[in-house]
Length: 195
Length: 238
Image 1 (cartoon, helix red, strand yellow):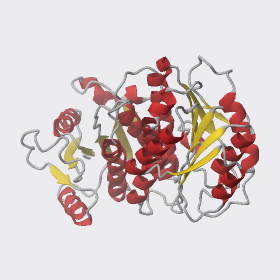
Image 2 (image 1 turned 180 degrees about the horizontal axis):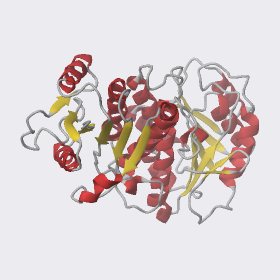
Image 3 (image 1 turned 120 degrees about the vertical axis):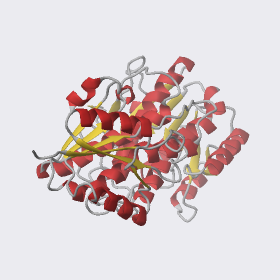
Image 4 (image 1 turned 180 degrees about the vertical axis):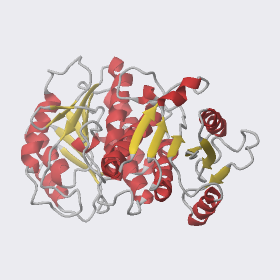
């Protein structure tokens, strides 16, 4: 039986773990990868408890770190069928006093650029695979009105991310890549049925 | 006399908007970024009583708040803000398999997206006191996710999609305070977005400025959900 390999990559270990387990239950071989930069590493993953053995972490802005991560992946597989990304760093930001440029940029980096960079890095390993790319996202950040105050920086970063996914899809669909945005309760087993 | 603030007034559309507002009898606070560009000071010298040029780099908190302090010394209120300043890049054609430049993407986002928030926040004391409370945002078709057919242009398109989202969230938050938002796609203009004047483009900045100001002053969208309109008045999808 041919194994299907999925890389679950994000910045929050508990979410990665949950998705990874659900994928394994659904028959996938799932590899957990944490992507964090100097800007974002304090956000989530360091204090989230022990990683599973074999969980790989890397900093997408450093070639050596990328190389090491890819080497570790290659000890499991040289072919990735699916990359599942889950980056959702949220920091409240309000007009009239709490707009901080640094936080705006941090959300852009964490939710948009790191995801884009991660996919860019994984593409060479996906050429022989199923070429599925999944973005676990927050549909409340869509262009609908009245989703509540305090979300401006976060929603802007997710709009930028949706645009990056659209451009990637435009560029890669002729090569067989599919992009899927999914949203749902991670505790719900049906999330994997969307894949 | 109504007062407007225009960011990126040095040349191109910003200069054309500043010029047209002055012709219409407005007082204009014109944000200047390029200290070595002559057109804005020349224009201001023709309207000594109504044109005020202030240094304004919307990528810098310090510059924007200094500009707001200068403006507070010039006027008690601003009626209309035109968020025009923006940058593009010569790296637009780099695709996902060509080696993307993330530092450049951050630079573009800092100007095109966060810059609009900085200016809105810093000048809010003055705009709260204005009669029109109108925030006009120069966006682009490049920010329309639904219509996007590009296979590259990551940094610029992402910055404009985020700008549109930011405008929408600001509109929701500030509308109860009486604010009006106008989101505008100016079309392909003979301006300097790529660094040199693009004479191959379709539209002159002066004609777009005329259409933009007609839209900014119009009340037909009052009370309706925010949309992005182009220079011909057509609505663009998010």
